[in-house]
Image (cartoon, rainbow, N blue to C red; front, side):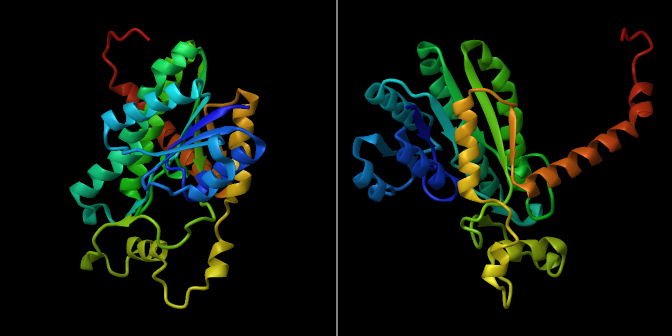
Length: 287
Protein backbone atom coordinates (compact mmCIF):
# COMPACT_ATOMS: atom_id res chain seq x y z
CA UNK A 1 0.00 0.00 0.00
CA UNK A 2 1.22 3.48 -0.92
CA UNK A 3 0.02 6.93 0.04
CA UNK A 4 -0.50 9.44 -2.76
CA UNK A 5 -0.98 13.20 -2.58
CA UNK A 6 -2.89 14.45 -5.63
CA UNK A 7 -3.60 18.06 -6.56
CA UNK A 8 -6.57 18.97 -8.73
CA UNK A 9 -8.11 15.63 -7.80
CA UNK A 10 -11.49 16.15 -9.48
CA UNK A 11 -12.25 15.70 -13.15
CA UNK A 12 -10.12 14.57 -16.02
CA UNK A 13 -7.28 12.13 -15.58
CA UNK A 14 -7.16 12.58 -11.80
CA UNK A 15 -10.61 11.07 -11.30
CA UNK A 16 -9.46 7.82 -12.89
CA UNK A 17 -6.23 7.72 -10.87
CA UNK A 18 -7.97 8.41 -7.55
CA UNK A 19 -10.66 5.80 -8.15
CA UNK A 20 -8.17 3.11 -9.13
CA UNK A 21 -5.91 3.82 -6.15
CA UNK A 22 -8.74 3.69 -3.63
CA UNK A 23 -10.17 0.54 -5.17
CA UNK A 24 -6.88 -1.32 -4.82
CA UNK A 25 -6.37 -0.15 -1.23
CA UNK A 26 -3.91 2.75 -1.46
CA UNK A 27 -4.40 5.87 0.63
CA UNK A 28 -5.09 9.11 -1.19
CA UNK A 29 -4.66 12.67 0.05
CA UNK A 30 -6.68 14.69 -2.44
CA UNK A 31 -6.73 18.45 -2.80
CA UNK A 32 -9.47 20.28 -4.65
CA UNK A 33 -10.58 23.86 -5.11
CA UNK A 34 -14.09 23.16 -3.81
CA UNK A 35 -14.84 21.71 -0.38
CA UNK A 36 -16.69 18.40 -0.48
CA UNK A 37 -15.95 17.78 -4.14
CA UNK A 38 -15.12 14.13 -3.36
CA UNK A 39 -17.91 13.52 -0.87
CA UNK A 40 -19.18 10.42 -2.69
CA UNK A 41 -15.77 8.75 -2.57
CA UNK A 42 -15.28 9.90 1.02
CA UNK A 43 -18.51 8.23 2.12
CA UNK A 44 -17.43 5.04 0.38
CA UNK A 45 -13.79 4.84 1.49
CA UNK A 46 -13.73 6.77 4.76
CA UNK A 47 -10.28 7.39 6.23
CA UNK A 48 -8.63 5.87 3.17
CA UNK A 49 -9.35 9.21 1.47
CA UNK A 50 -7.96 12.38 3.04
CA UNK A 51 -9.50 15.44 1.41
CA UNK A 52 -8.98 19.16 1.70
CA UNK A 53 -9.00 22.33 -0.36
CA UNK A 54 -5.74 24.02 -1.34
CA UNK A 55 -5.06 27.38 -2.96
CA UNK A 56 -2.37 26.79 -5.57
CA UNK A 57 -1.70 30.54 -5.74
CA UNK A 58 -0.68 30.70 -2.07
CA UNK A 59 2.71 29.39 -0.97
CA UNK A 60 1.61 29.62 2.65
CA UNK A 61 -1.58 27.63 2.09
CA UNK A 62 0.29 24.97 0.11
CA UNK A 63 2.91 24.56 2.83
CA UNK A 64 0.28 24.37 5.59
CA UNK A 65 -1.74 21.74 3.71
CA UNK A 66 1.33 19.62 2.87
CA UNK A 67 2.64 19.80 6.44
CA UNK A 68 -0.79 18.86 7.79
CA UNK A 69 -1.02 15.90 5.41
CA UNK A 70 2.34 14.53 6.54
CA UNK A 71 1.50 15.14 10.21
CA UNK A 72 -1.78 13.26 9.95
CA UNK A 73 -0.81 10.54 7.49
CA UNK A 74 2.81 9.97 8.44
CA UNK A 75 4.43 8.88 5.20
CA UNK A 76 3.43 10.08 1.75
CA UNK A 77 5.11 8.17 -1.05
CA UNK A 78 3.92 9.96 -4.17
CA UNK A 79 3.18 13.56 -5.12
CA UNK A 80 1.00 13.75 -8.23
CA UNK A 81 0.94 17.35 -9.42
CA UNK A 82 -2.14 17.29 -11.62
CA UNK A 83 -3.87 20.65 -11.11
CA UNK A 84 -3.79 22.81 -14.24
CA UNK A 85 -6.08 24.33 -16.83
CA UNK A 86 -6.04 25.29 -20.50
CA UNK A 87 -5.78 28.80 -21.91
CA UNK A 88 -6.63 29.19 -25.59
CA UNK A 89 -6.75 31.87 -28.24
CA UNK A 90 -4.42 34.09 -30.24
CA UNK A 91 -1.42 35.28 -28.24
CA UNK A 92 -2.44 38.85 -29.03
CA UNK A 93 -5.92 38.27 -27.61
CA UNK A 94 -4.83 36.85 -24.26
CA UNK A 95 -4.50 39.44 -21.51
CA UNK A 96 -1.55 39.88 -19.17
CA UNK A 97 -3.82 38.89 -16.28
CA UNK A 98 -4.75 35.63 -18.02
CA UNK A 99 -1.10 34.82 -18.65
CA UNK A 100 -0.21 35.56 -15.04
CA UNK A 101 -3.01 33.32 -13.79
CA UNK A 102 -2.24 30.32 -16.01
CA UNK A 103 1.41 30.42 -14.93
CA UNK A 104 0.35 30.85 -11.29
CA UNK A 105 -1.59 27.59 -11.44
CA UNK A 106 0.16 25.44 -14.04
CA UNK A 107 3.76 26.26 -13.14
CA UNK A 108 4.12 28.12 -9.84
CA UNK A 109 1.51 26.01 -8.04
CA UNK A 110 3.27 22.81 -9.09
CA UNK A 111 6.66 24.17 -8.06
CA UNK A 112 5.39 25.42 -4.71
CA UNK A 113 3.89 22.02 -3.97
CA UNK A 114 7.11 20.23 -4.92
CA UNK A 115 9.13 22.62 -2.72
CA UNK A 116 6.80 21.96 0.21
CA UNK A 117 7.25 18.21 -0.27
CA UNK A 118 11.02 18.03 -0.53
CA UNK A 119 11.91 18.47 3.19
CA UNK A 120 9.48 15.65 4.02
CA UNK A 121 10.75 13.41 1.21
CA UNK A 122 14.34 13.94 2.37
CA UNK A 123 13.44 13.20 5.97
CA UNK A 124 11.68 9.94 5.11
CA UNK A 125 14.37 8.97 2.59
CA UNK A 126 12.24 8.45 -0.49
CA UNK A 127 9.55 9.91 -2.73
CA UNK A 128 8.24 10.08 -6.26
CA UNK A 129 7.07 13.26 -8.00
CA UNK A 130 4.66 12.72 -10.88
CA UNK A 131 4.31 16.00 -12.75
CA UNK A 132 1.50 16.15 -15.27
CA UNK A 133 2.57 18.19 -18.27
CA UNK A 134 1.09 17.83 -21.76
CA UNK A 135 2.06 17.02 -25.31
CA UNK A 136 1.82 20.81 -25.63
CA UNK A 137 4.90 20.98 -23.40
CA UNK A 138 7.00 19.81 -26.36
CA UNK A 139 5.54 21.90 -29.17
CA UNK A 140 3.39 24.96 -29.73
CA UNK A 141 0.72 25.78 -32.26
CA UNK A 142 -1.85 28.42 -33.10
CA UNK A 143 -4.42 29.12 -30.38
CA UNK A 144 -2.33 27.29 -27.77
CA UNK A 145 0.71 29.55 -27.46
CA UNK A 146 0.24 30.70 -23.87
CA UNK A 147 -0.97 27.34 -22.57
CA UNK A 148 1.99 25.67 -24.26
CA UNK A 149 4.38 28.23 -22.79
CA UNK A 150 3.19 27.34 -19.27
CA UNK A 151 3.77 23.65 -19.99
CA UNK A 152 7.16 24.26 -21.63
CA UNK A 153 8.14 26.03 -18.42
CA UNK A 154 6.90 23.04 -16.40
CA UNK A 155 9.05 20.72 -18.53
CA UNK A 156 12.17 22.84 -18.05
CA UNK A 157 11.75 23.32 -14.32
CA UNK A 158 11.00 19.70 -13.50
CA UNK A 159 13.73 18.36 -15.79
CA UNK A 160 16.22 20.32 -13.70
CA UNK A 161 14.52 19.40 -10.44
CA UNK A 162 14.67 15.71 -11.35
CA UNK A 163 18.48 15.70 -11.35
CA UNK A 164 18.67 17.88 -8.25
CA UNK A 165 16.49 15.65 -6.07
CA UNK A 166 17.73 12.28 -7.35
CA UNK A 167 20.54 12.11 -4.72
CA UNK A 168 17.82 12.15 -2.04
CA UNK A 169 16.18 9.01 -3.50
CA UNK A 170 13.38 11.07 -5.01
CA UNK A 171 12.34 10.11 -8.51
CA UNK A 172 10.63 12.44 -10.95
CA UNK A 173 8.37 11.56 -13.87
CA UNK A 174 7.01 14.14 -16.30
CA UNK A 175 3.81 12.84 -17.90
CA UNK A 176 2.89 14.16 -21.35
CA UNK A 177 -0.69 13.16 -22.18
CA UNK A 178 -2.34 13.91 -25.47
CA UNK A 179 -6.05 14.52 -25.75
CA UNK A 180 -8.09 12.81 -23.05
CA UNK A 181 -11.73 11.80 -23.35
CA UNK A 182 -12.85 13.90 -20.41
CA UNK A 183 -14.26 17.43 -20.44
CA UNK A 184 -13.76 17.24 -24.16
CA UNK A 185 -15.72 20.31 -25.25
CA UNK A 186 -15.69 23.83 -23.85
CA UNK A 187 -13.13 23.37 -21.08
CA UNK A 188 -10.51 25.97 -20.24
CA UNK A 189 -10.23 29.74 -20.45
CA UNK A 190 -10.24 31.75 -23.67
CA UNK A 191 -8.73 35.01 -24.80
CA UNK A 192 -10.62 37.73 -26.61
CA UNK A 193 -12.12 37.03 -30.03
CA UNK A 194 -10.32 39.66 -32.09
CA UNK A 195 -12.07 40.62 -35.34
CA UNK A 196 -8.75 40.62 -37.20
CA UNK A 197 -8.43 36.86 -36.69
CA UNK A 198 -11.93 35.97 -37.89
CA UNK A 199 -11.77 33.07 -40.34
CA UNK A 200 -8.10 32.31 -39.67
CA UNK A 201 -6.73 29.01 -38.42
CA UNK A 202 -6.42 30.29 -34.86
CA UNK A 203 -10.09 31.32 -34.96
CA UNK A 204 -11.14 27.90 -36.23
CA UNK A 205 -9.12 26.05 -33.60
CA UNK A 206 -10.43 28.24 -30.79
CA UNK A 207 -14.05 27.69 -31.76
CA UNK A 208 -13.43 23.96 -32.09
CA UNK A 209 -12.00 23.80 -28.57
CA UNK A 210 -15.00 25.76 -27.31
CA UNK A 211 -17.31 23.30 -29.02
CA UNK A 212 -18.73 26.28 -30.90
CA UNK A 213 -19.08 24.43 -34.20
CA UNK A 214 -22.50 24.39 -35.88
CA UNK A 215 -23.86 20.86 -36.25
CA UNK A 216 -21.05 19.26 -34.27
CA UNK A 217 -21.56 15.52 -33.76
CA UNK A 218 -20.38 15.02 -30.18
CA UNK A 219 -20.08 11.24 -30.48
CA UNK A 220 -17.99 11.56 -33.63
CA UNK A 221 -15.89 14.27 -31.96
CA UNK A 222 -15.15 12.01 -29.00
CA UNK A 223 -13.82 9.33 -31.35
CA UNK A 224 -11.30 11.85 -32.65
CA UNK A 225 -9.75 12.09 -29.15
CA UNK A 226 -7.15 9.38 -28.61
CA UNK A 227 -6.65 9.20 -24.88
CA UNK A 228 -8.50 6.76 -22.62
CA UNK A 229 -8.22 8.17 -19.06
CA UNK A 230 -8.52 4.70 -17.51
CA UNK A 231 -5.62 3.35 -19.56
CA UNK A 232 -3.54 6.44 -18.86
CA UNK A 233 -4.18 6.11 -15.13
CA UNK A 234 -3.05 2.47 -15.30
CA UNK A 235 0.27 3.48 -16.87
CA UNK A 236 0.94 6.20 -14.29
CA UNK A 237 0.24 3.81 -11.41
CA UNK A 238 2.36 1.13 -13.06
CA UNK A 239 5.30 3.54 -13.35
CA UNK A 240 5.13 4.30 -9.63
CA UNK A 241 4.83 0.61 -8.75
CA UNK A 242 7.86 -0.25 -10.88
CA UNK A 243 9.84 2.53 -9.25
CA UNK A 244 11.91 3.29 -12.32
CA UNK A 245 11.60 4.60 -15.84
CA UNK A 246 12.48 7.42 -18.20
CA UNK A 247 12.11 11.02 -17.11
CA UNK A 248 9.30 11.64 -19.60
CA UNK A 249 6.26 9.45 -20.11
CA UNK A 250 4.27 10.04 -23.29
CA UNK A 251 0.63 8.91 -23.21
CA UNK A 252 -1.53 8.68 -26.32
CA UNK A 253 -0.62 8.05 -29.95
CA UNK A 254 -1.47 11.68 -30.74
CA UNK A 255 1.03 12.83 -28.15
CA UNK A 256 3.72 10.50 -29.47
CA UNK A 257 3.19 11.55 -33.09
CA UNK A 258 2.99 15.29 -32.45
CA UNK A 259 6.03 15.32 -30.16
CA UNK A 260 7.99 13.14 -32.58
CA UNK A 261 7.19 15.49 -35.47
CA UNK A 262 8.03 18.60 -33.46
CA UNK A 263 11.36 17.27 -32.20
CA UNK A 264 12.32 15.95 -35.65
CA UNK A 265 11.60 19.33 -37.26
CA UNK A 266 13.54 21.19 -34.59
CA UNK A 267 16.51 18.84 -34.93
CA UNK A 268 16.53 19.25 -38.71
CA UNK A 269 16.39 23.03 -38.37
CA UNK A 270 19.23 22.92 -35.83
CA UNK A 271 21.43 20.74 -38.01
CA UNK A 272 20.93 23.14 -40.91
CA UNK A 273 22.38 25.93 -38.77
CA UNK A 274 25.48 24.07 -37.60
CA UNK A 275 27.87 26.00 -39.86
CA UNK A 276 26.43 29.34 -38.76
CA UNK A 277 26.62 28.37 -35.10
CA UNK A 278 30.27 27.26 -35.33
CA UNK A 279 31.23 30.33 -37.39
CA UNK A 280 30.45 32.61 -34.43
CA UNK A 281 32.87 30.94 -31.98
CA UNK A 282 35.76 33.03 -30.70
CA UNK A 283 39.03 32.29 -32.50
CA UNK A 284 40.69 31.09 -29.28
CA UNK A 285 37.74 29.00 -28.04
CA UNK A 286 38.95 25.65 -26.66
CA UNK A 287 36.53 22.94 -27.77
